[in-house]
Image (tube, rainbow, N blue to C red; front, side):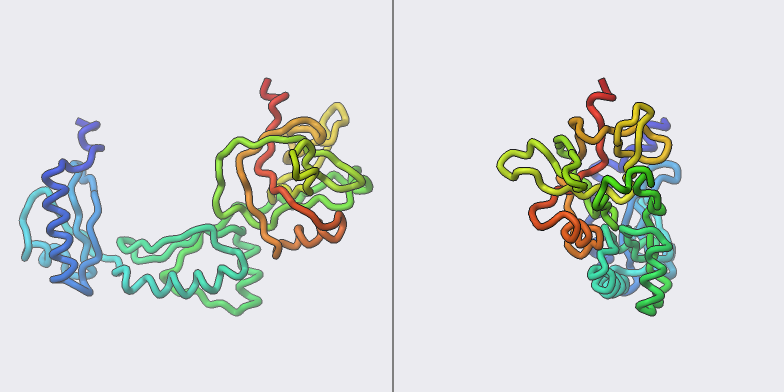
Length: 268
């Protein structure tokens, strides 16, 4: 019985709901929000209206496979909020994704920065966010980037200033090496040894055997010089201050963004 309640309504109910949805979109324009599946506890289609939901639905159907919900806003009312604030945030590379949520009556954005980083920009730009805009922030950035004992060997340890908007999952690999104070990707075919930029939370430290490693405090990550793997490909932005520093300290040329690095050696 519990398994049946987790299933969606059957094909007949779905077809009837789609017909009613199209009719309500025309007949109740401005009041009708949309339909969705609810489980109360059995699966049914809920038709949502901004006001007088039960009475409005009863004028069109008394089908027990359907129920009503009240609240929310129409997409037409929420879309301008999405469009305006996406345009405001995009030049600052703040948004990884977002959508209009009619049933909740809000616009939500997934942010590429944490709340403190966002608040600094928002205060500078004097942004006043509308009530219907909700922001989901990234976790606070790992502020520790490099073991002080290693700083004299490294010209730059570049870390991206934003979480990637999209994480691709192709398994990539190579050897990250340190040449003349700059991190490069060795054995990269015709591209030579491109410069490397790391994820925003990566640290450069030492493992118990004294090898230089990539990881976070308390972790024993992959060693510099050994073959590592990561999910990608990852992108990067020339507007990132770390990219500008990397080019200043290590020169021009191609850059490869390394995703979260893993060690096949340690996995074995």
